[in-house]
Amino acid sequence: MNHASQPLTHTNRHASPRLHRRHFASARMMPHGVAESACTARVAPQTLAALPATVVRDAGMLELLAAEMRIADLEKELQEARAMACTDPLTHAVNRRGLENAFQRELARAERSGEALSVVVFDVDNFKRVNDEHGHSLGDRALQHLVSVLREAMRPTDVIGRIGGEEFALLLVGVQGEEAQAAMTRLQGTLAAQPVPEADFSLTVSAGVATRVANESLEALLARADTAAYVAKRSGKNCVVRA
Ligand SMILES: Nc1nc2c(ncn2[C@@H]2O[C@H](COP(=O)(O)OP(=O)(O)OP(=O)(O)O)[C@@H](O)[C@H]2O)c(=O)[nH]1
Image (tube, rainbow, N blue to C red):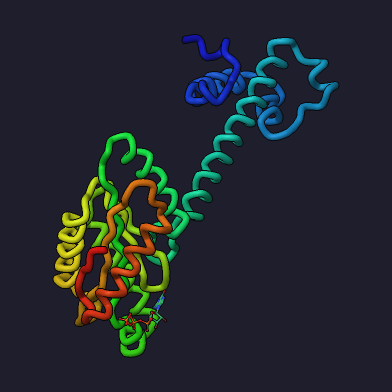
């Protein structure tokens, strides 16, 4: 395809690096630093008038390329800002907004495929004691450890979200109630087997599991799982209860 004959649009932006190299190669051959000025600043009208038409066209193309590159940079920055807005900075789990996004995405998929969608809400047990006995900084690292252990043990399609201080939620895609309860019990075992780094204890959690019923919102699903997690706390902690 002759990229040079096409206007630079979002759809053919991928052609830009090649075009970029070609035009900068020809720009290097231009006199009086025309290429540099075209890339970095406006060319004065009297300068343009004195230049041959091919040089003016190339300079215009370079300006276009510079604008394209700037747009690509801005798009990347926007993407990074969007990701940050959905991520908990301490643990890098998704935050509530990220969880909502993931839920909407998985819901659409589940409704097409008829797959189940389960949610687990869990709260770290006796976490105040961790802070009181070992300091807030180790408490922070304990939360980071928890997320990294769970992430390693979960399926790539599952989502882990931090919905409060020491409160988390998992979105288990394609998993029914009983299976979700078994999955969470397995994750508890994994967590118990891996002590917090630089500490001599491992974390336990109390969890509630709920599987989505027809037309149920994330809010309602989380509320059911949360009630079940509360029951787990009241039943002696370190256990999983199904709504
Ligand atoms: N280090 C650290 N601690 C946090 C963070 N967010 C919340 N916490 C602490 O988590 C603790 C929660 O305490 P409680 O609500 O009493 O719960 P708990 O001690 O886990 O008791 P149970 O829930 O009954 O098992 C408080 O001490 C909070 O300060 C955080 O980002 N970092």
